[in-house]
Amino acid sequence: MPINPFKISGQWYRGNTHSHSTESDGRLPIADRFTAYQQAGYDFLVITDHRTVSEVSAYSTEDFLAISGSEVHPENPYGGSTYHIVAINIHQKIDCAKLHPNEVLEEIKQQGGEAVLCHPYWCGHTLLDYQPLTNYFAVEVYNDTCTGIGKGFSEEAWDNMLDRIGPVHGIAADDAHGTEHDCFHAWVVLKATELTTDAIMDAFRTGSFYSTLGPEIVDLDLIEGNEHSKKTITLECSPVQSVVFKGQQSRGKSVVAPEGEYITQAEYDVPSGTSYVRVEITDDHGKKAWSNPFYF
Ligand SMILES: [Zn+2]
Ligand SMILES: [Zn+2]
Image (spheres, rainbow, N blue to C red):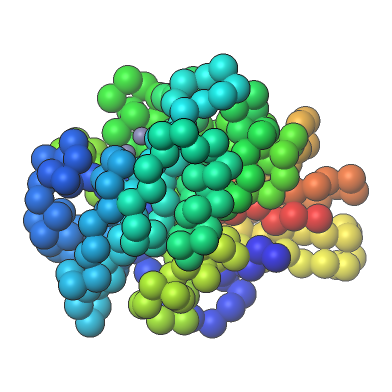
């Protein structure tokens, strides 16, 4: 079951789940990639070079966690382009040739890893491509390097998956290849008991995180059985221009600050028949943050 990270004890950690080095098409060697993220204030980074895996545990320090991973590319038997799947915490290279994408996803699980479906908009992927898949835990709601062609945001793909497939977490990631343009712009803020791979993976699996391009979610709560509504979601956040509560299909609510003002809190009475609600906030520079959904 998903966990609300604002209602459990633990530490907040900042991390990026998707990055490349000179082991594939990235511009920085692995050591320099880790140094850059550590200096930028990150607590963890996953190296996800295309079609290969590097063992990176030696780059971990007391206050920085280096996580091995890969971006794998199984062929797509459902008519769309080749899949881009980030595998967090795998240690053996997966040779995708001749493997069905679900066999690749199963292999990621068997290695103790977790799979993220990457940049749907950039891939031109739709439900036709995602409905047959199993064993993934998240989809990239935002991928920074894909903004290079204006296809960084995949919110509609995430919502379609929530509406038609079922629970799936949303992740914002840099997909860092270069040294500046696609670095340090999109990250997860994750609540875990400690900075170890096991604890971070548990937090990923349970959705104990939110994703952001800068705005901060300060508190998020689900209040049940109050006087005016059976269920109310309450939000506190850094000053933003708009807050949107999104449910399935036509359900939801948008709150926009008056000209020259900001919003730091909002709430939503959840109508009966709602299957999920996620929260999205946008600041005055267009920077967004996304909670994972509450499910009902
Ligand atoms: Zn990719
Ligand atoms: Zn990538």
